[in-house]
Image (tube, rainbow, N blue to C red; front, side):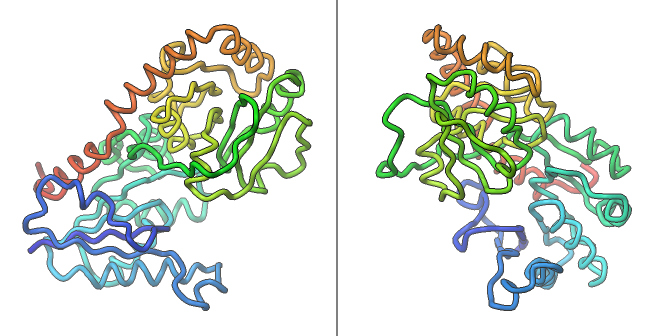
Length: 328
């Protein structure tokens, strides 16, 4: 029986990736490890991240046969997984899933990762832009990088979480967000409400106007009850965008190479230049004045998510990787 080992940077205890929808589980033994801290020592010592080394070593030990496969999730864990596999003398096929950076590593780690990533057979990224970006940065063949759309089931929401008492716009996310431009826009639109759901560091040194509410560190069900709307220019935000599409929320986003595969201007979203509060103001006013446009955008976005962002596409990709020979 072939073992497929998954090792993730962070995961819930019951996480089993795509196992439940995998097309043919016959003959597959799934195993899971996570770098989520499991004891007091791992919670106390964050640098170096002991839990990451522990999870990678457990995953390496779980590979008992040459035919066994390892799937690592997130880039820094992927780097260390490759290093520990090399130390252990294991040459199992390695798929790096969710290979995504908010910020690319500095020169020292870049050089180390070039060596470790060269041993990996395939990478999965969530935008076509990232294929070229990471291939060039780590000096690896672009053919190793495969684009899949971010996939997820429609988000569950907490119906008891209180909402604002009037119609509102929402921006969500903690990485790479340009909240300064957003706040400037809503200072110019005092008649409209905005709710921001983020992490404290993203709002550092920013002062919201009276028509803007800021919520920090909500759990997932409360987060999706609020619902996201705006995005930034980095290769982040795919979860936010796809969730918004599935929940039928019109999207306004600044242009991003990392999200241009998802956002089709004037078809399933309104796309504006980066750091341009006047363009953002005009886009918001356009939605306010044209309810029919908002409905068209959400209908098209929902159809896009149903077509491209179904988790079964991930399962099919994993099946193809697991069942093919390296040369095929």
